[in-house]
Amino acid sequence: LQLCADLAAFYSDARTERKAQVTCAEPKHILKPKGSPLGTVKLRQELQSLVGHPHDAPDELKAARDERGADFGDETGTRSFGVKAKNKKRQVRLSKENQAKKRTEKRQKRKRGSTQSNTDSNDDSFY
Image (cartoon, rainbow, N blue to C red; front, side, top):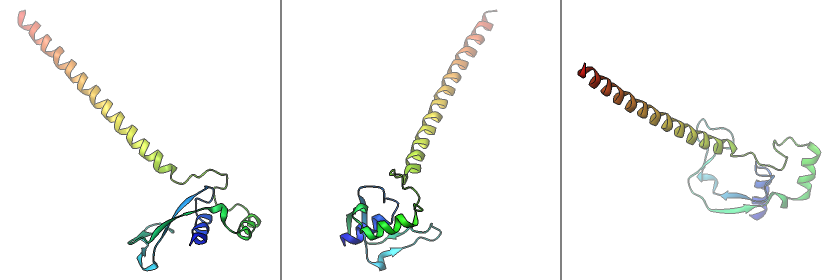
């Protein structure tokens, strides 16, 4: 099973990482959700999780990959998988903070405006 985990990590987006978590399941418990992109699966039941080491893959496979060239996407040593999700969470947090800031500014302007109109009406009553 460890060799299978190493191969799964070697052929995945995590091939430039030192370790990758690989989940094992029986085929009858693996589903592909409708409309999801290729490679996306949903597990009903998981057997176990292993740690795959892509650098422990057989040397023949590494040599074959080198002969074909780096057509696997990111081979620069940095993993870009999941960066969009991090940035998306950050963007959502920043937009919520900005909206809250704008709301408080509007409330303060309303309070200033209402106190000014009250003082103006009081001044008119004297004249």
